[in-house]
Length: 239
Image (cartoon, rainbow, N blue to C red; front, side):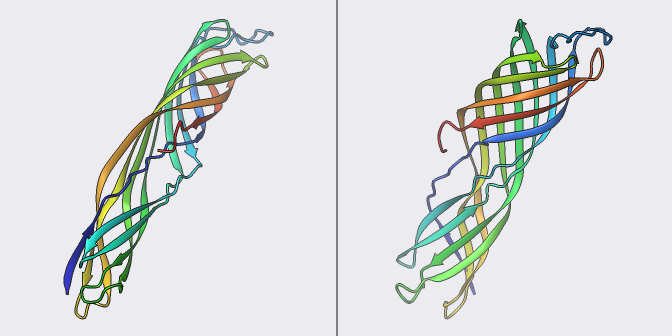
């Protein structure tokens, strides 16, 4: 048999996450006696380290075209854009009354399997393409976000605080994308089989908007609390 190689240009679409949800442990730097009967003041500084899950998916399809055997062939690559785990860390500082500012960094990474389907022109007969299908495993996708927020925080009970935050998010995404496929064929060349794909690392960046809410429960006078946070980021465009 003989090997074949097809390649072509593709449009790379980079997506940004639309939601992140996590349950986290938080270190709060305060100095209030636990025996006070009134609501404790909101912590001056909050440092958070989060582990969460990004439930939304962003599947998309890419189309490659190439010339072989004096005809045009095509490869369709279907990227699943799967959900997965995300980590997040940040700090918030109260500036005036119940208003403050915060910054957080989030990172998402996972490996994906991309399904490809190709129509390879026949070397002897026009308009008689061979259909070739194959999966490409272990393609890496990562997303890094920096979120700058205005924060409003206040007590709803003696040891429970609620916070609302919103602001811009600066996102950068990287993805392994398929640039070509290789296939095997042998005389009489009526059938071709998938061998492997050639990939490259593509990237993109953009500015989006995020907003969310936070509920904190203080378990001690100094240094410990637990909280649940929901953050939602909205892409500014589709790429």
